[in-house]
Image (tube, rainbow, N blue to C red; front, side, top):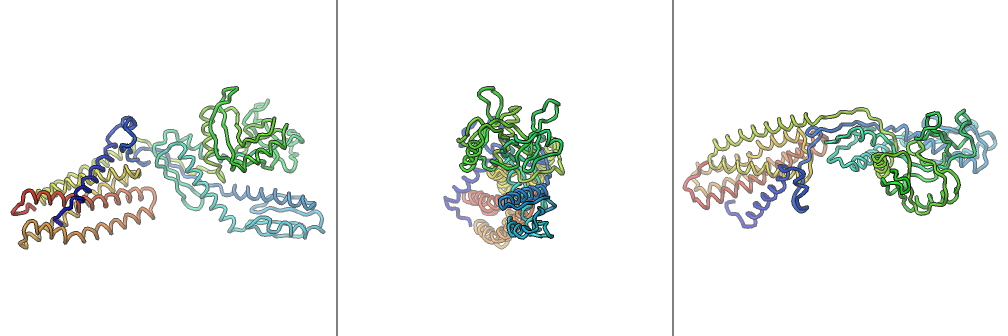
Length: 525
């Protein structure tokens, strides 16, 4: 244990140098770091919501909308199948978690039942005379709800990442809720607008054979629906369009969307591009309907309804409207990130000001300084020169923790600061074990070099066991915990690893170098 190979000495020096290099950016201005060469370490510790302020949102996925949309799609499928088979029907519509239809001709009721049975997986067919009902099973409802929540989490993550927010916390809470924590967000209202929009874009033909006025009077023809526009009509109310329900092209086929400017009017627009399948459908829809109005619908509103002048075969186009530059950027962001499968409802919103975070950081600094001073004084008073060496290793341990947080881009929270304060006390545990063991060997009559060698050899297993059990507990806290608990577990885990390195390697190197240079007759411990 007293012998140190050259490669071990080099390893200790390299790790310490890297620790200083990766921790140094935390003491420099961000503007200065941006001007440094890219190969130099320039990452700073990311502060959590409780330290730098930000927004806390609790969202609920409206799973009922997912089921309702599935039922509307089922109704459309039933309509198509019955029309193909030339079976007359009435009262086709959604009822709860199912769709129902009444067959006019009793003689064709059995044919209709066979036709509709198994039309959609996860549905059960019930019938009462000529009335046929397809009901979605409870398991299918549960599976679709779970899928909607998981997909919503992924879409929310994409949207938040597009805004440039660093180290957001986005996780599922309960069956249908999503917790979103956004540290350092300066414009929480914009984030709420981005998360509150479903951003489901579809392309439909405008029903030009029927009158909008008649539809407004309550005579909406089958297969069509009334939708408002973002543009105001002559009365100042939103202009209404009669839209065919059939989706010609879905926004699910979009692969890119960017804000731009119209070359003729220089107004902000949003350009989009489909994948190969979407481009094929878009080209087919426009080539077959030249001269007709083609409505672009976003979240139940008609953005624009231009006339198809010619077939659009390139798979790309643009959306024009009364966009601001910020509006065009936000819409393109939403389309790039993808549509939410269901609306998100904001159940809880909290804003944490940076002043509270500053107070927390100040309190954490004071606690860390007081704890470190107390430990330093105790080590010097108890172990003299060896205590000074342990204190030098303690300082390097703090540097390595800071470097580890910076390199891993782990988020430092208030509980994380508590983990660092705890690590300061734990960091000298290994040294205390070694030094007490060395004292026992000195009392037993061993020479200085023999006492040091025996002290480190016999305390090594105890040090490993003690730190390993604590590390296992910290890892379990990280795996099964969330939020503040994870922040505590991260700093505690990094602190345990670095304290083992500084105690077993750095302090021992300092003691061995001192022994070989001074060759003392007695040990000051």
